[in-house]
Image (tube, rainbow, N blue to C red; front, side, top):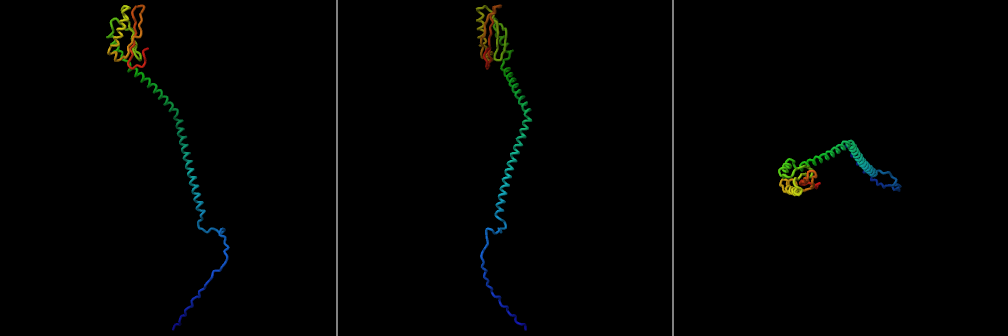
Length: 209
C-alpha cells in the first residue's frame, strides 16, 4: 500500500515593509531619459525653415539672373540688328517721300483739264476779231493771252464782251469756277489791244497770280 503523500505546508506569507530612506535626487541634474528629446524637433523645424528660406532666396536669385541674361541677349540682338533696321527705316521714309510726290503728281494730273477739248472749245467760240497769242496751263488754272483787233475805242468793248462770253459758256463752267480779266494793254507797234484772261480751276486752293 502506497504511503500517503504529505501535503506541504503553505509557505508563510512574508509581509515586507519597504525600507525608509531619504530622497537625495536632484531632478534638475538628472539626465533626460526620453527616447526623442523635444530639442530635436525644435532644431529640426528650425533647420527645415532655414533650408526652405535659403531655397526660396536661391530661386529668386536664379530668376533675376535668368531675366538679366534674357535682357542682355535681347539687347545684343537689338544692337546687331540696329544697323539694318536704321537702313530699312531710311528706305521706308524715302519711299514715303517718293510716294507722296507721285501722289501729288497724280492728283495734279487728274485735276488738270485735257488740253485738246479745251483748245477745241476755245477755237470754236473764238470771235472773229480775237486771236489767241499764248495758252499756259498752270497747277491751278489757265492763263489765256489774246489780241483784240479793232479801233482803240472799240477794242476794250470787244475784250469785255469776250469775257462775258467765256463766263457764260456751259462747258467752261464745268471746269472753271472763276474767269477774270487780269491785264489789258495796248501794243505800240501794232496798235492792237493785248488782253490776259485767267481761268481758275474748280477746287484750286491758290488764287490767281
